[in-house]
Amino acid sequence: MTPEMGILWEVSFWEFFFVTVILGGGGAWMIGRSTALRWSGWGLLAFYVFLLSIAVRFIHFSLFNGTFLLPLSHFGTGLYYGVVDYVVLFAIASAARVFVRNRQMARQYGFLDRATV
Image 1: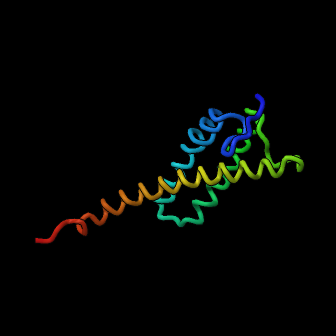
Image 2 (image 1 turned 180 degrees about the vertical axis):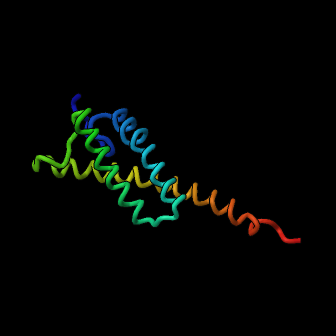
Image 3 (image 1 turned 45 degrees about the horizontal axis):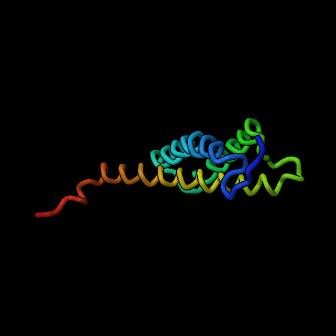
């Protein structure tokens, strides 16, 4: 595949959508869910998403002829698309964390939402 080099994707939109949004997004949703269920902090979520974004960048590199951080001649391109992957995955993980945390709060502290008579 020859790269298209868009703002969000390096090879093609469908490759970005499949690898980053569907595969990586599923992992990011599970990261957000697990940090919410264990009442962990945002720092742990950011670290786990960082590790996931490296794995997603490697899948782009190994399967679809994208760039990785090495060799150093491709470092800038790989870093740019790595940051794009990180931002997308962090947004998905944050949405999952907020969704699960809201359900926890509504279930555990539901009496606060009831109107007093």
